[in-house]
Structure formats: C-alpha cells, structure tokens
Amino acid sequence: NEPGSKNPNNYTGSIVIPATITVDDVTCNVTAIGKKAFRSSTITSISLPEGLMSIGEEAICKTNITEITVPNSVTTLEQYAIGQNSQLKTIHIGESGGGSTWGNWVFWRSSGGYDVYMVCDIMPTLPDEYTFDDSHASKIYVKSELVDTYKADQWWGQHTILPFGTEYIDFTVDGIKYTQTADDEVSLTYAKS
Image (cartoon, rainbow, N blue to C red; front, side, top):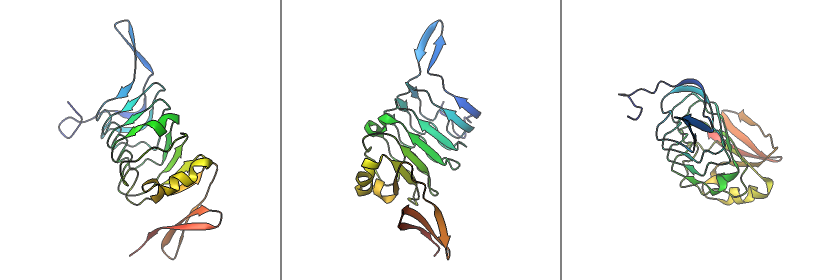
C-alpha cells in the first residue's frame, strides 16, 4: 500500500540508498525510487546513488530534508518527485539533468525559493512555471555560457539565473525584498500589500 493517512510512512532520520542490494545471492542495481516511497516521512537527509535513473511521483515529497543531490544518472523526475519539502534549501542537479524528463511540480512548494545548482550542459525543458515555487524566488546557478539561454526561457526566466561562482545577496528595504541579480542589478522579489 502507498503511504498516506491510512498507511503512515515510518522512515525517519538520514537515509542512504545503496547502488546495489543483494537478495538471495543475486546482486541487483537500484535504478528507481518508487511512487510515494518516502512521502510524508520524517527523513532529514537522503543520499541517492549514481546508477539511479528514476525518481517516482511524490517519492521524496513532504519530508524534512534540507538539501538534495540528484545524481548524474537520473533521467526521469516524475510529478512532485521531490515536492512540498518545506525545509529544503539547496538542490544539486547532475549532468544528465539537461536530458531528463521532468514531470509537473517536481520541486514545487507554495513559497520560499531554493538555491539550485544545474551542472548539466543543456537546459532542461520545464513543463510549467511551478517547477520550483509559486513565488519564483529560487536562484538558479548554471554554467556561464547558458545564463542567457535560461534567462530567455519562459519558465526558467521567472527565477533569478546566475553563473556558478556568483554569490549575490537578498536584502529588504522599506518592507520590500530584493535579490541582487548582477553586479549592478537587483530584482524585486516580494512586496507587502
């Protein structure tokens, strides 16, 4: 049965997913995390192995993780795969992220942005504007030669796109939040109504 209110998910603490497991003297590669595997658990961290190819729908959804690295080998991220994690701050996307298939709302949550580090050589195509957060407050760090490509995209461009190695700040003036987006530019990120 899938985890849910009638079938609670009891995983807790730090989880390390091995690259292989042995069952009855047969060694098997771990290639996927199934639908809702860790949904609504109290895990605080999860380590994913190289060789993992797919993260299923809501697989790591509604947990207490603060950072996640999607391995280079992952090519499929299903709907809400790592969504609604209110404590999540940092996301690292591996080299194959550019060729991966992303479902709707993969990292979505209603507010608060992430620091996202994209090491892929090709910009992934996002299915909609809600991949990360409704507030579009995420900072996306990409290879310098891809900055303009990301900024020009209708969905990626709604976030702050920065080259790797750039450390700009967020600040508030008169109740209005800003993010520095270049040495001489800022972007309004939130205004009280």
